[in-house]
Image 1 (tube, rainbow, N blue to C red):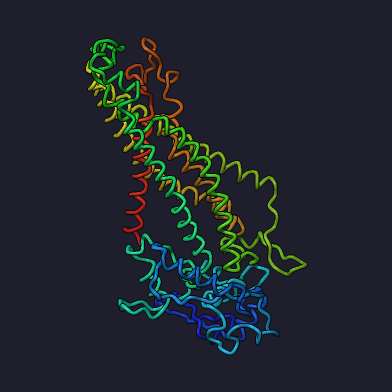
Image 2 (image 1 turned 180 degrees about the horizontal axis):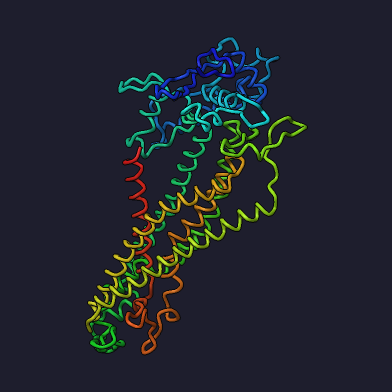
Length: 520
C-alpha cells in the first residue's frame, strides 16, 4: 500500500509506523545495504579510522593508566571496551581497503554513523514532484502518510550480564548508584550520537564547575555564622544594656506606638548577617569571574570534544521544515534544490511587529502579576503587624516574605505553561524555514518570557523596594488609599531577597524533578 523510495538490505534497521484509513497499525522495517552506506558516506564526508595512533609512549600510557585507577570518580568496572586511538579521514570508496575493518561489513560503520546516513537518505529522498517540496520522511509524516519514524533501540532486559550498549549504559550510567561517577561520554556518543552526548557533557561540566563555587559559598555562610557575635551592629542591637535607648517610628497608622529596636530585632539581625557579611562581597566578585571562566573553559572543552568525536568539520545542508509552505519555495538554478524565497519586507515587518506587540503585552501581564504579589504583601503585612510589639513585626515580615514567595512560585509555574504554548504558537505563525531558525526564534521568546516571569519579583525586592517606592514616616505610599507598602527591615532587604531566591530556586528544581519523574 505504501512505497519506499529507496532499497534497504543491511543489519541496521529503521522503523516506520504507518496508520492507513482502516486504523490498522503497520510497521515498515528499513535496512540499508552496505553499498548504499558507502555511497552516502562518501557524499556526506563521514570520517572513519584508517591508522592506529602510536604517538603516545608506553611510559606515559602506564602513568596515565595508573592515575586513572586511583581516581575515585571513574567507573572501574570493565563493561565498556576501551577503544584504541586512531587517525581519522574522510571516507572514499576508492580507498576503502585502507580503512580499519574494511573486510567486515557489520563493523565497518558504527551504529551512529549508519543512523546518521539513513536519516540523511530519509530526509532528502523525493516522493512526489520536487518542485512542490515533496521531499523527505518528515514531510510524509506531516502529510499523514506515516505516523512516526525512528531508529530502533537495542533489546533491554533485567539480566545482570549486559549484552549490548543499551544494557551497559543502564548498568554503568543511568542509575542513581553512579551519581558521583564520571559519565561515560564515549559510550553515550556511540549509542545516542554526538548531539545528545554534547548535552550530557555540558551538564557534567556545568555541575563540576559549580562545585568549587558552592564550597566557597558554604564557607562564606559559615564565616557569617562565626563572625555574627562580633559584628558591631549585631552587638549593639542584641546588647541588653541598649534596651530602651533607640525608639523607632510606629509600625502601623492608628493602633501602634513607638517601639524599642534593641529588644525586638536581635534574631533578625543575626539571620541577616549570616547571609550579608563582608565575605559576601568577595563571593560576588569570585562569582563574576567564575561566570566568565566557565564560558571560556566550556568553549575549550567543546572544541576538544569536537576534535575527539570528529564533528568540528561536519557540515550538512539543513533540510526545510515540513510545515514550511510549498508556495514559498523556489528552485535554485545552480544547485537544483528547492529553497525558501525571500519574504517581502512588508510581510516580514508585519510578522515581527505582531510578535513584538504580543510579547510586550505578555511581559506587561507578568509585571501586573508582580504588582498583585506586592498588594498581597501589603495586605498581609498590615494584618499581621497590627501591634506595637517589634517582635511581632519581625515575625510578620518573615511570614509575609515566605507566603509571598510561595504565591509568586505558583504564579510563575502556572504562567510558564501558558507562555510555552504562546511561544510555540508565535513561532509557528512566523514559520521559519529550517529547524535551527525555528529553535532560535522559540528560544528568544521563551528566554524573554521566563526571565521576566522568574526574576521580576527579585528585581523589585533588590532595587525598587526602598524609600523612593515605599515612602518615609508621615509620607508612606499606599495602595488604594488603604494599605501601606511594606518596606525593608531595619537591616535592609537582603534577608527577604535570600528567602525569595531560596523559594524560587529550590521550588523550581523540586517541581522540575517531579515533572520529569511523573511525566514519561
